[in-house]
Structures are given as C-alpha cells and as structure tokens.
Image 1 (cartoon, rainbow, N blue to C red):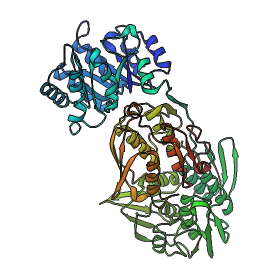
Image 2 (cartoon, helix red, strand yellow; image 1 turned 45 degrees about the vertical axis):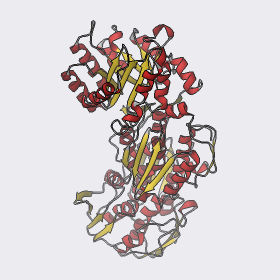
Image 3 (cartoon, rainbow, N blue to C red; image 1 turned 120 degrees about the vertical axis):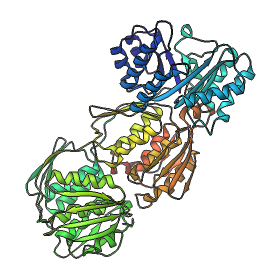
Image 4 (cartoon, rainbow, N blue to C red; image 1 turned 30 degrees about the vertical axis):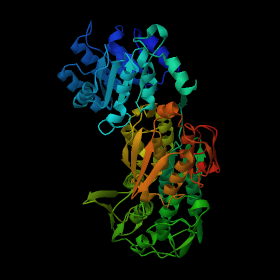
Length: 637
C-alpha cells in the first residue's frame, strides 16, 4: 500500500486530506503536527475509513514521556499501526508494545541510516534487533549512494523470509539511487511504502509524491468505497424465530425482517402448518398454532438445507401418520449426512438420506449419543421439538461441529419460553432438554446477518472501505468468526454502536479453522488469495454437502483466477499476494467466465474476486445469490 506521510497540519487539514478519498493509508507524524491535542489525536485515530499509522519521534520539543503518551493515545483510539524507532528507551517500547497488543495495532520498530547503507552484517543485526524489540513489522530505511546499496537492502526480502513473516518487512532507500527501491519494495511484498503528500513536503531525496506513486502503481484507479452497506436480517435467526413463533400459542412480532429465499421458504412452511403470517414494514407478525399444527402429507422446504433438517424432527413430533419432505434446486439429492442414524436414535425412520424423503414414526424423548459430523441443523430441530415431549431428553454430541449455530438455536428458543441447557465436557457437547414445555409468543429484534456482512467487510479490508450497520459483537451467529479471521490477516474490524467497519489494510497470510462456520469458506478463501504469503484454512471436510461441493468449487475458481492452492487433508492452503504487490507485478486475478455451481456463497466469492481482476468476471448464475442476500453486488458482474 501507499502510506502518505502527513505532517505540519492541523486536525481539520488532516481530516480534509483523508476525506478526499485519495489516501489509502496515512502516516500521521504526531511530532511534526504540534497543534494536535490529545483530544485531536483521539478524534483523528478513531476514524474507520482509512488505515492510519501513528509516529511520534523523540527529540526536539517532544520528550520521551510525551511521545509515549501520544502514541498510546493514538493506539487506544484506533490506530492500525504504531511506529517507534529502535533507539527509544526499552521502558517506552514495552509500554507501547503492550498497548498495541491490547488494542490490536501492529507494532513497527524502525531504523534509519541517514548517511549511507551499512554492510549486510549490520543490516542483519538491525533486523534481529527490531524483532527482539517486539516488532510485528520491521522497517529498515537507508541512504543509497549507489545501485549496489539499494540492491543490498532489497536482498533483505529474500534473506529474511523465514524470520520475518510475509508482508511484515518494509525496507527501502532514500536518495536518488534509492528512488526505485520505494516502488520495488511493493514488488517484493512490503506491506507499504512511503510517499510525500506533495513535492513541497518531500522529506528525503528520492521520495515520490503520493500522486506519482498512485499513477505508477494503479494507473490512476480509485479506491473501492462501499459506503454504508445494509445487509439482510440473519436468515439463521429469522428461520429459527419463524418456526418458534409458529409453535407458540399467540401472536409474536419479529422486527427487522428482510426477505431472502430461505427465510421466505420458512414462512411458507409455517403457513403450511397453519400459522397466520403478515408483514407490516420490516416486522413479521406471526399468529402461532401452538403444538397443534396441521401436517399435510407433503411439505415443501424450498432450497433451504437448514429448513429441511429442522423440519424433520418437528414434523415427526407432531404428525399423526407419515409425511414426505420435498424441495427444489440444489437441495434435491443433496446428502443429509447422519440424518437417518440420528432420527433412528429417537424412534423415527427416514426413507433415505436426501430430499425427497418420507418421515415415518413419532419422535420419542430419551437419551442418545450421536455424532456431530453431520452438522448442527438436524440437532437444532431436535432442540426445537423435544421440549414438546412429555419427558426430558439428553443429547450427547460426539465431535460437535457448527456449535455456534446450536447456541443460536438455544438463544432463540429461550426468547419463546423454552428452557435448554448446553454443556461442554471432554470434547463433547451435552444438550439437556426438559419435557412438557410449551412455546410462548415473543416480540424480538432480528439481528443483521454476519454471513452477508462477511464479503462486504472483506472487500473493505482488501480494496477500500465499508461500514455495515445492525451488527452485534455479542451475536451467537457462527459467522461472527469473520472478525477474528480479518484480524488474523492484519486488518482491524471496528464495531461501534452496531456499525462494523473495515478499511484497506496491508494483509498477510493467516491460519484459521472454519469448522464451526463453513459458510465463510468461499469468501475467506478469496481473502487468503489477496493476502501476502501462505494461508491455511481448516475445515474443508464440512464443504462437500453444501449447495455445491465447495472445496472443489473453490479450487476450480482459483484455477481460473490464477491462484495457487491445494488441499492437504482437511486444510485448504492458498499462496496469496497482497493487492499492491499484484498491481506492482502485473499479477492481478484473471477474469473470464466462471460457474457459481448455483451456490450463493460462490457468487459472493466471485464478486469479491472481481474487484481485483484484470478483466470482467462473468458468472453463469448470479440470481442464486437471492437465497440469502437478494440484491447483493460489489461490481457489475
């Protein structure tokens, strides 16, 4: 990225520069902006639309104590990076490093050789000194008197690959002989390079202006700005709430509803059972039928895998005979892993393990040990139906997966008066359900969808900036995990007053386990492709029975995009490259024709990739994205 150095400005002047949209990252030289008060620093670094680096050099009118306090204040307010020269006292370095860790900022330890470029042995000691000084990112700047000087500094990128993780070494040269090294640094994988705000504000020989660097790197292109992007209500929460309200005797109000194909399928299913559902504005009004529904001989669950699985136990609890469950699209023939074995443990027989299927028998309360390898959705159905039995039940889940979804189910059911306890023990999840319960009507607010927010937040982190309202860090939605994933890749996710924001950041390879949130896999895979270095995404085994075989779909997508990837055991390994390096090396993602495999999550991933492609990405089926996020778009694909 291009880090524009800003100095000798007031708060209002700095704000105007950042508001211009021309700056993708900025270094704020606090020591050279003497008018900035502590309140100004807090206001400035609390911005969420531009990645900011705080620097305050010790010396002149800035004392050690002032530098420490001002840098800590910047980090506490929201600075993404904090830069401290290696000569600073150890006590200050310790305090700033501790504060950076606490607030999620990256700690830059910097060294400047203003008179020349030392030999390789000194450079070697310098890198090691920065690392031992707590550096998350190492910055080495020398003065180059010759091309050989510059080459010696550039060689650091290869020499320290094993010691300094990809995307965390920033090394370049001052001086006319070092001018090209500032651009070359991006070609070698530096997280950022520095540029002056204008010719008048160059601070060293050979320094580019930000405008010159933008022209050379991006050819004059502008940042992607998502602005304030609204996401639908969580379909995971909406579907659960519609079912619970249907089973209640009375009228419930579900505020914040927005339609998508899966949620609309849940409403049609509820009406089939006898519920009366109307909508006023964004509020669903559900007149439930208690535990006395009408169960027809055949029910239709659309293309929703969750609705299909949750309906099976509910139907088996309430039916008087047998019932056929049918669906459409990618749902038909999709394996319902472990469904037959799980239902047999409670006295119910399924004709087969895919839709259409027939349900025979009635659900019985009791104790059972089942596997979690088939996911959480059928278990959510058991949680919703077994409270209606006369006696208590206990489900022990071995190798549980998608556990956050089970907590979401429990939380929604509690809103409707159902008592369920979840306990973890020795790697197993135990669900205790009292019998003889009844659903009570409730008025609840539906949360915004973290699944739908994920591609938007990733787009902001890779390409520009975005803010997404109606999201909560207290949510039990599984895909809240995208926050930790983004932070592990090197960006900050700010959530204030229910608004989540990201800004374009220098991203590096990361490791994450998506076993509990498989819906994130396609878009997180694109994040990995746009992050410098190798990333490891665990949880591939959960992808085979989704709307597509997503592991194969992702590998196929990467083959078309020109991204190196492979699957080893349960892990997808992606060799990624940061956006700035892709531009600097001419290695943008490849455009062309792609298939979504009629999978809404793959559409989102391809649209996300299209922002970093060298030509248009054409997708064979874009409409299927309406399954979860009608109207989703990032660019015109």
